[in-house]
Structure formats: C-alpha cells, structure tokens
Amino acid sequence: MELVSTTQPPKLHHFDRLPAGLANVSLDRLGTILPGPSLIRIAGEPGPPLFVSVLLHGNETTGFLAMQRIISEYGAPEQPLPRPVLLFVGNVAAAAQGMRKLDGQADYNRIWQGDRHPEHLLAQKVLAEVRKAAPLAGIDLHNNTGKNPHYGCVNRLDCASLSLARRFSRIIVWFTEPHEVLSLAMSHICPTVTLECGVSGDATGTNHVKNYLRHCLELPEETLFSPPPNHLNEIYHTTARITVPENLCIGFDPCEDGQDISFREDLELLNFEPVPAGTELGRYASAAPALQVIDDHNRDVTERYLSFTDGRILTRVPMTPSMFTSDTRIIKQDCLGYVMETYRGKEDF
Ligand SMILES: [Zn+2]
Image (cartoon, rainbow, N blue to C red; front, side, top):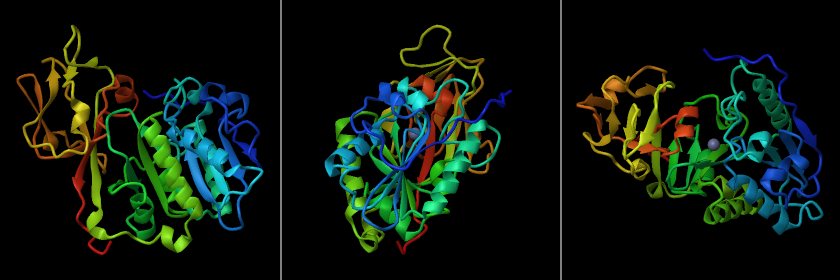
C-alpha cells in the first residue's frame, strides 16, 4: 500500500530577481542559494516570459546547467534577457544528493494533476503563478538514464507545440500518459514541450539545450511557432509502459543468483529502434511473475506485447521502445521503458 503523507507540503520560494550566485553554484551546494522548490523571475525585454522548468528530477542536471550558461552569457540579471524567464527549479533537495527523488517524496513530475500528496499543493501554486504570468511557451527539461537520442515530447499535436519540439530534434514523441506530468498541465496554458536531453551532465547535451534556449529567447514569436517541413519529422506516439512488479529482484546479464529477471545487457540499444516480434528482452526465473505492460487507459495489455516462453521474455509484436534503462533503481522508481508506434495520423503538420 502506498503511504499518503500528511506532512506539510514543500514550501514554494519566490524570487523576484535572480538570486546572486545561482549562475556558478554547484548542484551539491544549490541549497545554500535556494532553500527548496523555487520560482525565479529573471528580467528581460518587455513581453511575455518563457517558462522554463529544471530539476523536477534531481539527478537530471542538463537543464539547470544550460540555464546557468544562459544567465552567464547574457550577463543576467544586470543585463535583461531578450525575453523574461520564469524559471522553476523543482526538487532542490534531491538534486543536492544526485537523486531523481528522495525516499518519501512524491515524484515531482507526477504531481501536476490530483491531490493525494503534499507536493500536489506545491504544483497547484506553481501553476497558479504560471497562469498569471501568461507565458509565451513552456519548456520542461529532462534527461534519460538510458541511451536515447535527444528528442522533444509534446502532449498536444498543434503547430506551435510541434514547432517547439522540432526546433530541438526531428524526433518527436507525443504522449498523453503519464497524465500527471508538468508539461500536460502546462499545455492548457501555452504551447509546451518536454525536452529529453540525453544523459545527465553530458557537455554536448548542455550545449544543445543552451543553444535551443537562446533561440527561444531571441526568435520572433511567428518564427518560433512556425512549423518546419512535415517530411523531416519522425513522430512517435507512446502507447504503453512496461513496469516491473515491485518485489522482484532484477538485474542485467550475466544473471546472478536470486535474480527474478535478468534483462539483456544491451537493452538500451533498442531505444528508438524498430524491434521485430520475437526479440528477447531478457530471461526470467520460472516462478517469477511477468513484466506488466499498461496502456494509456490503464489496462493490462501485457499479452498483446510480450510472451513468456521457456524462461525467455519475448516481444510478441513489432514495437519501438524508448527510455529503456539499465539503472535498476530508476526501473523500480519509474518503469523499464515505453512502447511507441510511429504516428501517421496528421498529414497537415
Ligand atoms: Zn525526468
């Protein structure tokens, strides 16, 4: 049973100007400048702000590092940015420890709908402030733990959202589950994108995001939201997620004693690749319950996607996975990965 905490919600801290030292502070010392989750207004030329969110997951540092570069390069706050920025720095406590979230905390990217956790109240406060600020666009910055290309995710298939994603990568993922994410709540306020920026801390990723943010700060609105040529895109639709029952002992090849499931060593290499039916994902001990595949309507669709034969976990249909990771802690906290299909439904974009 999941415990619903009755503790106080984490306090939202407001900064009406960029706090001194933020551009240079190391993540383990971030708490000396930001006492917790913080909404920071960074001054810019007149106009609607850009909403940028970083560190919803404390171990996903690229967005924060890119924002530090932006602040330094533009000389903020002494010099105004080309556009104001409303910056949300999420799970400061987990970031100090290099963790996605701390034990006992809700996942900061699963609190933007609902009201079960104290953190939901924090999310509602942030959204109320964002609505008031009426941003031009929203950008939520994340990393993967597994080997994935850089890609942008949208929750709506409108031109502005897709254009924002396309400016980052030709690979675009459209998803509606999990529905408790920040970007989905934001998509009702302004065009919003979630950027998956590769592995945390990788310099190429930081540079890519920093340049992307520069574009978003400098380009006129019409250009920012004008759709690129349709044929250049690869749009995927996330249809299901693969989860591992909590009590199982999992690992990767080579299999160790006592492991219920041993995944293939190169599992991450399957991300964004067309994987044919009959592909082995791993092996399971005979008594172990299976992996579960859950679709967007929360239905168990395991039998449609996977078969379990002679101790082998096999794909039953062709699929394109994403976010497969070999980080067993992340698999337990979140999921093994997602199943996607190529989206061909909207020819006018
Ligand atoms: Zn994340």
